[in-house]
Amino acid sequence: MASADDDALIWTRPEPGTRRPKFNRDQIASTALAIADAEGFAAVSMRRVAGELNAGTMTLYYYVRTKDELVALMDNALMAEVLIPEGEFPSHWYDALTAIAVRTWDILTRHPWALHSLRNAPVGPNNMRHFEQSLAALAGTDLDAPDKFLLINMVDDHVHGNALRAAEVREAGEPARDESPVDAALQFARVQIATGEFPHTQALFGDGDPHESWARVTGPLSERDRFRAGLATLLRGAADRWKLTLPDA
Amino acid sequence: MASADDDALIWTRPEPGTRRPKFNRDQIASTALAIADAEGFAAVSMRRVAGELNAGTMTLYYYVRTKDELVALMDNALMAEVLIPEGEFPSHWYDALTAIAVRTWDILTRHPWALHSLRNAPVGPNNMRHFEQSLAALAGTDLDAPDKFLLINMVDDHVHGNALRAAEVREAGEPARDESPVDAALQFARVQIATGEFPHTQALFGDGDPHESWARVTGPLSERDRFRAGLATLLRGAADRWKLTLPDA
DNA sequence: GACATCTTCGTACGTCGTACTAACAACGCT
DNA sequence: AGCGTTGTTAGTACGACGTACGAAGATGTC
Image (cartoon, rainbow over all chains, first blue to last red; front, side, top):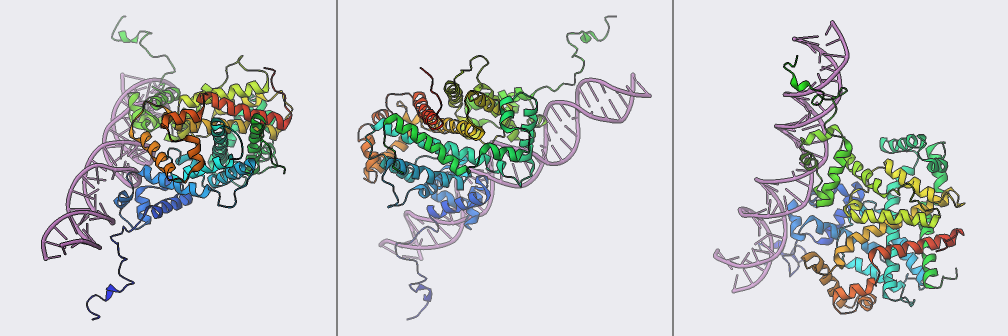
């Protein structure tokens, strides 16, 4: 009876309930994510993603209606990373909000292309989970609905705004880079300052080595610590405004 | 002697030192800006801008090396609008910073495509003027260089972050809209909430009419006033942190 | 086997940015 | 007046892109 269909072994035979597609959305999203991380968002094209999966380009359109939907998938995958794991959730509102914000900032900073690109992505499940966590952080306070919403938005705005600018500036501040764009920008700034039209800027940066000036102006804190300092200032203002308790620390 | 060249009248003859280009960068930038305002940033293509000027497409490349340079021109033109006019500059640091931030927010909100699109534009002259004005706002304080820089960045981050999200949300909150995308998003959120996975979100929004829920959660303040409230909170935190005076008001 | 339906993907169209190159126009020379 | 130089405009063409259309292959049910 070991007849014609030896390939009908349990191992080679597809599971029942087959007729299963060769790919799935998670796979596609993570492939796209990998490309974006390695070569930037601009490298993520339908042809490219399909190629990476050894599929025909149009195959993707079976899983996704448009490229925007692919981007939505990418966004949702990224947002999964920003969720605080069960059990690591601080109990004090200040600590919880800080943990969420810092984690989000870390992710956004690790994927610098994301902020430029995922902005018009519609709300997905993980976006809602992120919002839910922020609300959970404020559950212990007696803020009313509009105030909770306002505070959460303030924190999110700060995170996104800062991550955005930090991503832009990152390489510019690094020494040991001498490609044209950065040097050109520094050179431009120096020439502008030399015109005397920018007395305050001149006083701030001085006339010395640009990289040294930059280091002096940014101060001793890392970009991440400067973000945290800004966040702490914001939350201090919020505590003041709404008479919220600060953690003992 | 009124001979062959009647067209050689002083009025018709071009001025000496001619050989002047037919266009200039300001013209090109404002044309591109107009297109973006009317039809969104995606409508700004080299062909389109050139067409609007009745020029050949490639003519633009005489004024600009790449499309990115065109975008830089657009960015610089926008940044001109955010500069506070001479004489309107408040003397107290708090008022000055607020004026700069609000004005910037207004401009960004009036050109919602800008935040999505101008982000990688390199620093231009008007960007430097904006920074110079921010420094001028802090001239009366005795903050040191790193603290000034940090505070200015915090405010800018807040402005950009908020304007970004406000632009996304704007239409979604408006009633009298029933196109598919917005309705689809609201519908999605309702279905998600109904799963019970989002108790805090559910408690916040309730089960009533989505637009009514939205109105209740955003509260009585306009988007602009909510931005100002967040900004005031941030600045209050800053005043606290650095022992700065608040205006009498 | 025949048929229906699920899944894959080749071809083709219209867009985009822009490299290359030719054409035209205005000036300084003689 | 003619000529070469150089500033300015623009046509053509190439290789990318997203995706509409529809044919082809694969897998299930009778």
